[in-house]
Length: 378
Length: 261
View 1: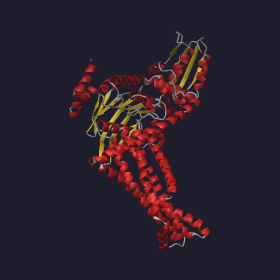
View 2 (view 1 turned 90 degrees about the vertical axis):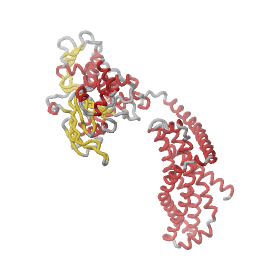
View 3 (view 1 turned 180 degrees about the vertical axis):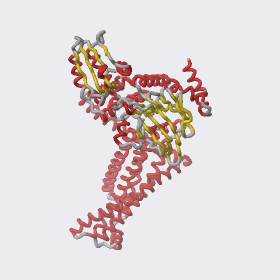
View 4 (view 1 turned 30 degrees about the horizontal axis):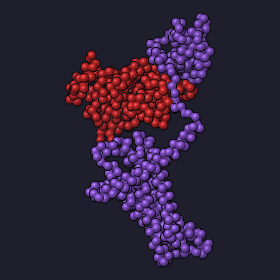
């Protein structure tokens, strides 16, 4: 190699301090030299320094910066301090970096960590409070818009509503049906395993029927729709918000609630009960299949027992919950979409929040329904 | 030996063809970039200026033709050769394309940390140097991209593009979206850096003032290829409807008048 590795010598022979760098002074070769050069500069503060550049084969901004830094550290650039022997290119580089030696901040300054924690806690509580108020106000606006549209039915966006019914409802049917079928089968297996210990195999029918009709069918549908459509609503409306489409609507006199939110809410409120119905049917079929294959309960016996023991109330108890779940999922999805601000990062955060919040609320509402049903003996 | 690889042309594109599905963007396109020049690429909307840049920097694989950078065919090169090439160029994307989870200084340090084994302190010094050279105030280093204005984002993007001391810098519409004062300063900055660092610059632009202020040569894209390439004065004289309209329209004349005065 003609370009020898970067290094430097210190020459004191002519009375003045002389630094003689040589070799290839480019960033990738300078990592090991940095500390030595800093030590040299610390030792030589305030002295006149000459840097003889004639031995430097190649130089980049990093090499130039390190040499200039040393120069400035040692001397206030008195008459005797100078670069010598630099060629034109190196001269230009040295001149270019000279004005840019100030260090800069790399990370934002963080204050007292204890205060930061307290601050975050307080902010979190306040944010939750305001978010709850805002959701309430959003629900109010949606309901009042719905009322207004009910009085002027020509304002209703049917095309959009039907589109969302297809997208969020119909297209979700296969996956919801499959999931429910499998859950029905799993519940039946549990029944087969445990109930048979008491010689009560036949109660598997009640187990599957009641659990799927009252809870699993509707709850699974709601959970899947929250993940599938709630997040999609947030992403759709949020990206419109980022592209200022929502602002454009407002300026053009279109009400975003009427155009975007209402069709989605109505579509889900119509479709989720239908999905829950499909889920309930397929869940029971799944349970029946396991009962027929893993136990000695023939389909005919299963159906007969089902008709005999499962009253219609179980079915209604499940189905009544569906529109409430749908309303909450659609509202949260749209609300979080409207809250998106500026960046794609915010869109991601809001989409996550939308799913988490709607799942949480679905479970909370389900618990309230369970208590309510218990009290009224439904 | 580094000297062996010194080509007159830093970038050579031959018979390039790019397409999206059936839609052909470029066909039989040739363009060369000489060492140490600023080449401005202009063309109407949809003529594929940015696509050409993306084809050269390896983001859009051409369906035919060769792209040679530093004498090496980028799309035929092995991983190691590619990585070597990638360390010798810097790219400024239109919106800056800064990593939003990192501060400006961390953005600049990202390629340094990845490719060079340097002490942390030196890496910070380098970041400070590049940030300052790009014309940003020192307190900008600790800011996140979301806290910066459009012009500052471009400067921060430039600082990151310059992090590894590249030989070639690609600029995608560097002055788009800047106010005229900011744009003029950015032009100055590019010329200044090109001269002091010996950079070669490949610049996609719409801005006539930038063309006049900075470019050594101009390439005009139309009809899926480069219809004219040369110093601005020569290109202006080309007898082509789009070129005449571009340079002799009201904006073209205004930019020329500014330069003459």
